Amino acid sequence: MSYQKNVRILILDDNRQMATLFVVILKAFGFPHPVVSATVEEAQDICQDNTFDLILVDQLLKRGSGLEFVRWLRNPNTTPMQFVPIIMISSYSERSRIFDAIGAGVDEFLVKPVKPIDIARRIDAVTFKRRKFVRAENYFGPDRRRFKDKFYNGPFRRADDMVADEADVFEFD
Image 1 (tube, one colour):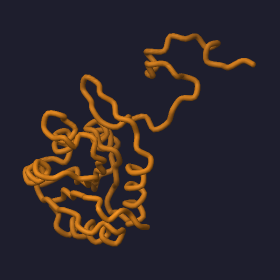
Image 2 (cartoon, helix red, strand yellow):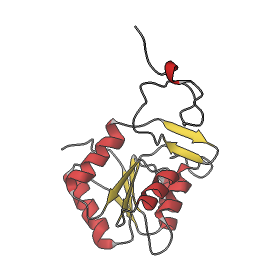
Image 3 (cartoon, one colour):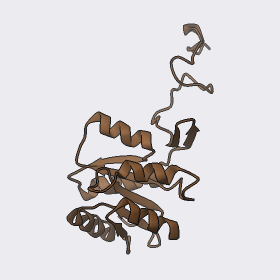
């Protein structure tokens, strides 16, 4: 698997062994110089002076939260990188943690322990299958819907928003 060599990647993980593992894997994929940060504050400082094409973020840090960093990134008032692909990494796989990450605006979620193939799949997903971004009152980030409903093309997609009766859902020849 080979990627463009000029892709800039930031890794936010306070566990030195995990950060080193990510660097080794990313270098094996052809990314020559991933940048590593151990704290949210340091990552924010780095992002003020640099731009990245991909960010890997650990969900739970000793000082701060990966979710806090993602919300900061997605805020157009704090950084110009609000559209950067973000892969959140966590030791926990509870639905609530995954939903918290999605609600913060991550593109993909990866549970530790990680395998290189899983990292490659997530990178491919955020690179080649990028979802449109949504701006709502309490959310900015990638569209959380992974599948399009072939029966509905209107502006509202929640069940409460649909007022069509069942006959309107079926196509007749």
